[in-house]
Image (tube, rainbow, N blue to C red; front, side, top):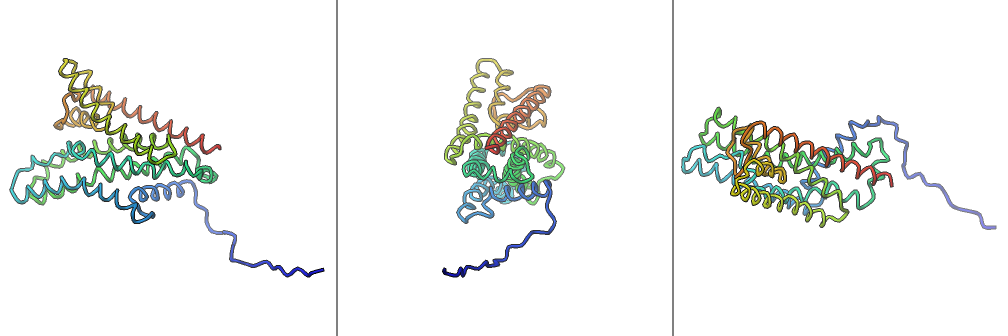
Amino acid sequence: MTERTGVIHDIGYRTYDGPRAGQGAIGRSLLWHGTLATFGFGRSGRAKILPFVLLGMTLVPAIVFVGIMSVMGLDAELLNYAGYQQMTSMFVILFVAAQAPVLFTRDLRSGAISLYLARPLGAATFALVRWASLLLAVLAFVVTPLLVMFVGGLSAGADFGDQLPKLLVALAGAALLAVLLATVGATVASLTQRRGLAIGGSIVVLFFGYGLTAVLQEVGVEQGAEQASAWLGLLSPFVLVDGLQHALGDATSSFEAPPDDVTTGVLMLVVALAAAGLALLALVRRYQRKGSR
């Protein structure tokens, strides 16, 4: 009988006896990791190109405006904070469409979601943290050009007291726009496990919804239905934010039929946030179903 010569090797595995992070620490870590991942950090070098190119494109108008003020001495009326998101809407839409699948499609496609949810973080918390990561990324994307334009405008001679209220209105609009875009992008991306479909779906919903809303509003105004046309702004985050900045912040509108009174503006804001809440609920249910498999 041959004597067995096998041995057990100690390859260094040890029992972890350090402190264990709670749900709060796990959530913060996941939030930070997800936000950075949308800009390509922690991923390949190629993954960083698109988000930073798009961010650079959104900064171009702000830099041009400040440059014109500095070189040609034009007044600060050139700095249109409230209308900036409409001016750069294509770049913002492409960023949301391209980066939402990074957070929502890969986990669902690979089946890793079940492993994530084996940890103390529940399905609802996980989905909301993913959404918050996309929200922070979009917020950084839309707020950065406004701050660059504000600081650049002050250095070019704009009055601080005159510019600050306009900036605050635009920042409030940017925050609402980020909430709506992150919700739409997350919901669309979570409905498919194919990244291409998620990107195409987000572009269709956001871009064509933007154009369709603007056209329908113009038709409504021509037909004398200004009030009904204002409510069509709920079909597009960009048009809605533009109308609310006009109704609640007294900003100049870029569209034909913004809400013409504060009450209508408040009601539209409530309806938009309620719709976003329902979309988030659908997102959570989607993760709960996938996590139970």
